Every structure is written in C-alpha cells, then in structure tokens.
Image (cartoon, rainbow over all chains, first blue to last red; front, top):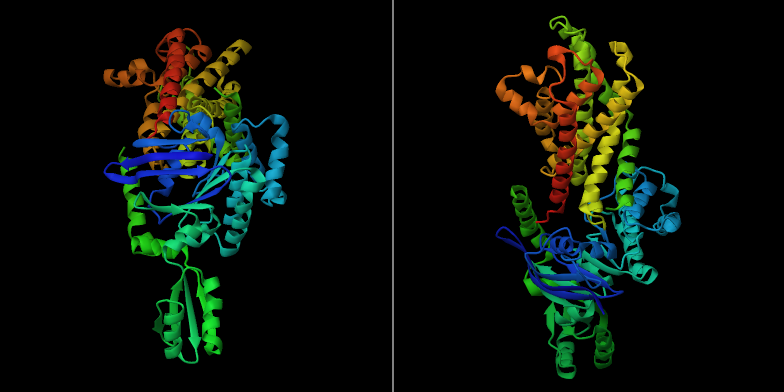
Length: 325
Length: 254
C-alpha cells in the first residue's frame, strides 16, 4: 500500500515552475530515491511533502493524511533530515535529542530510553554531552538521522544526506541508512544527485527541470539504456568479429584493439562468447550501465554539466523571488 | 496549545542564556552606563522637582530600556534560528504556530525580567524606599512589559531572514522606541508630533506604569503621563495583538 501519494503536484515561484505536474507513489517499507541535478525541484517537493510549502496545485498525502489539510497529522508521521543542518550547535547532542523528543510529545517514561537507543545506533553515545559545534560533518548528519527517528515516524525524508561528507563518512552513512527500513519499520524518501548512491533504492524517480522523466527500479531503468557492454580482446579480431556476428547475432564495434558489443545480460553473454570463440579470447570485460548512463540517455547531458549550468541559477531565482514576497 | 512545546522552547533559550555569561554581563552594563553616567551628568543640568532628582526620574525608563533591549534581542534570535536552520526543526514539528510564538515570547519575558530585576535591585543606591508591595508590583509590570516587547520583537523577526538586518532593527526600531518612550523626558513635554509617536509606542506605557509604582504620587512635571489603568490596559491589549499577529505570520506559507 502506498504511504506517500503525490498527484499532479505543481509549484510555481513567480514565473519559475520549480515542480511541474509530478505524480508518484511510494510503498510502505521501501527506499524511494528522488534523483536529479541541483535545482531540478527535489527540495521543493520535499518542502511541500513536509508541510513547509503550499503547492500551486495538485495533491500530496502521507500515511493517509493530506499535506495541506492536516499538516499536524502529517508532521507526526514524518521525520526529516534537511540538506543543511538544523541542529542547535550551542546545545549538546543529548540536549538536541531531548528537545526533539519533547517537541514531538514522546511519552516521558520512554524518552531517556529512546534517546539512549538513538545515540547507540549512530555510535555517538560517548559524545552525547559535547556541544554539537565540536562535531564533524559526518557526526552531525548521523545525529540528525537519529533525531529524525526518535518520534518513530513512518516516513523519513533524507534530502541529500551525504552532501559535503568525505567518502568514508558517506559509506558509513549508507550502510546505516539501508538498515533503517528493517530496523525501524520506516519508509525512506531520499534525494541525491549522486547517481551511484541511488543504487540502494527499491524504486527511483528521475527528475529534471521540475518533471519526472522516468521512474522504476534501478535495474529497470538501467535496462532502458540497452543492456551491458561487453568488450573482449582476441588473437584475431577480424575472424572473431565475423563469428560473433554470425553465431550470436550481435552488433560489434571495434575500437583500439578491443571489440565492443551490447547485450541484455552480460553474465550469460560471456559463456556463449567463449564457447563460440574458443581459445581465441584473450580477455573479457563487462560494464554494467549506471544510472548516470540512464540520465545521459534521457536528457542528453550528464548530471554534472547540469549542476554547473542551471541548478544554481534556478536556486538563485527562487531565493530572489522569496525575498521579494 | 501544547505545553510541552512551549516548555521546551523556553528551556532551550534559558539554557543558552545561562551558558552565555557575556550576554548577561553586557545586558547589565548598558543600563548602568545610562543610569550613572548619563544620569549624573544630566542631573547637573536638569533640576529635580518635588524632591525627585533626574537620576531618580530616569530609573523607571532605564528599567524599561533593559527590558526593551533584552526582549527584542531574545525575540530576534528567531532570525538566527532561520539563518542557521534550527527554525525548520521547530516548524516541521506537530506543534501549533501559536505555541511556538508563545514559547518564544515567554523565553524573552523570563530572560528580560531577570535582567530588569537586577537593575531594579539598585533602588537603595538611588534613594528609593519602596515597600514590599511596590516591589512586587514593579516586578509584575516588568514581566508584563517584557512579554509585550518580546511578542513585538517576534512580529519584527518574521519580516527578516538574515542577521544583516540587525543594524536596521537596532537603528530604526530599538533606538527610536527608547527615545520616544518617556524614559529620558516626560512625554507631556515633547512637541505634539513626537507625543503622537510616543503614544503609539507600547514601551511608553510600561515605563509609565513603573513610574506610578516607584515615584512619589505628587511629582509635577516628572510624574507619570497616563493613569495606571490606561498603561496596564495598553500593555495587555497590545501583547495579545502582537502574539496573534506573530502566530499568523508563522502560519504563512508561500
């Protein structure tokens, strides 16, 4: 059963359309990835879902409650880790969690227990009495995730959770995020512009310029690119090429001294190749398509190009619009 | 209204106030400078009337100033919270916007009242001899005024998103409010146009009420400008209005 329902959502800031008629559902207990370059509309969508913004038109609901009509019910059902830290740096880790627990009316008898559990879970229990301003970026992010879980939300939003973290903290955080649905019975809605990070998602929607251009499981999306690229080197490329074309009915391209072909499943294609070519084969390489390839295929640009060009300018325009109103 | 939320918002501000010793120190230093330097300088120029010296006359005003600065500073910490993100943590919580405003206003009230009471405690050095009831009444007025100015500060804070606006607030709101409050000179002696401005200023009524309590009944020109009932009514009514406006402003979503 879907726990998040979004139906023809539109959000305009003046004449900028930040979110342009998007619809999607997220099933309970899954990890949903919202992918796209900066400025694509991911954060605006999150802000609408978590009741901070009203949409221009369309509907959104979480756990059966309308995000506009019943904001209080929605707020009870969600936890959020924003892109920028929302911790109070002048309070200790423990105080930040205590503040949250009281704000969400966690029963007094369970408060200490839950805070302790959360601190253990993110491995910050020995730093609980330190001021947050002394924490590293990774520690702050972990503390925020822990805080977001204290009131036992049904949906946890993570907006670019690994932005600005070093590779090791990123890896740690991912390990921990992927455990959440099982350990805390929570649905994860996350955004990222690192395509490789979205591999852990059960479902993905790719958003560009405010529109969802494709959605599905990571494997489904990668299949749209056209399969795995297999490259081989042989003792005799000319004969090998003819044999592959005749026997396996695959298109072969030659670049350098390597032969390239695209097949649906690289893992079953390789044994066939070796069977047909025998000991002519010197080396075999399989490259699975990445989500970056999916984005490239659908938009004709890589996410990084996009990031430099339009993302920042859209953000700037929205900020300028907000300042005026 | 959620009492848990109000309590935790107040507790947070109070904890931070206690941790920042320098804030309390400078909050106390400012009124002392005005009282003992400006006050003793001016009293050479301004003769007292009916046994009230100039320094005694400005004492209620200086208490009002202490409240003005600390209540507004406390409320515009909302701008800091917006800038550093913490406000979002509060806004996505299942808490009514009115509770947030009341929590913030009570934080300012408590912190400002503590500072006002410290200044009020200087009365023996200024030749005042109030009875216990007068002291209790003065503290009660300070707390009401602090709530009123704090909620006014919240309304101000909803208009600004970054602390660059701080000097604007300082120069165009706090200072004019202080100078047009009857703190340094009686409102009735001001030119007509400035009298109107002073009468629109809630601080005027708070200081006026403190004058009623601390100054002797017959003080001529240096006495209060309004009846005590008028002053107290204005403080209560404007407090309610500011809280409601603040609640509405927080409710606003684009």
